[in-house]
Image (cartoon, rainbow, N blue to C red; front, side, top):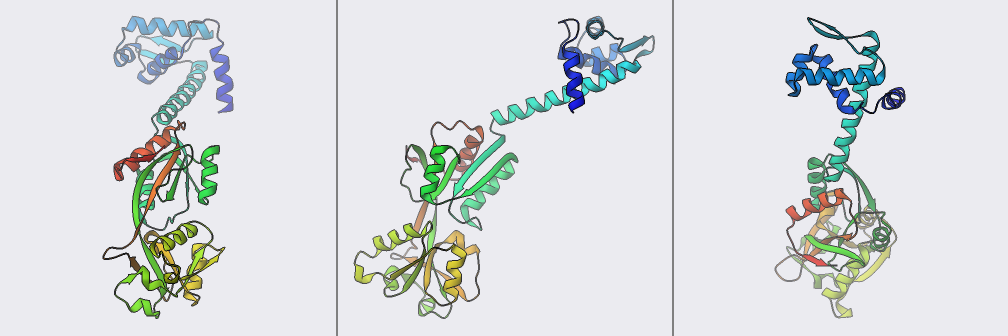
Length: 319
């Protein structure tokens, strides 16, 4: 490619300003058809016009590109090398234009998505798969951070969009509500609560609830506080600075129970069961929302927002 680009510079600094990329297309068409007449028909031109354009090209580059005969045209020895470079120029140009147009329409480019939910299952995973299928040319970068760090990442432009739990708007961002997921309890299969048909928040009293210091652990603590207003009705909460997987291993080892969202249930641990936790007759749910900067003009972001709006046609919740 470097040699072709070097040759391109030589061609585009020819003797006459009459030499254009359109002249190259005419010459390649003539070579492909082996005839000025057939090439002119394909290009919807008069034969005389095509012949004149190719003569201009030859005058510009100072060489005879084609040998003419009553049977048609064929490239000269030097003309064959010229046409090889010309084809490379046009192929690279066409590829550049196609990529630029695709990026401008949000069909190509890059998109950085920040999150702290699970990718093992659920609506987030389904949305990503839908986006990948419809826009395969867009490169997706997944960035897992805490809510606080996602706010900073959005402000600094490190991520284009953040998917978080809750509906509270993030500073200087537009937001839209997305899906909701059930809150579930993970506990040993021989735990007394595992035998209950329905588990309510009040059943957690006196339990050891293990939560991660990482998101969404603090939000789950807030949820417990909101559901159980009286301190005497609340479970004992123990925070650990570990991942979700390590937390479930602690549950499996008998250290206590934990709370999680239904998307996370895609990960199975031996001896651990998952059950809905309820307010009354319905399982408790937690909502998710998307946040992005209003001044982010990345076309790939617009395409991702279009996917989300089709799957979750809900109103904007803040700005």
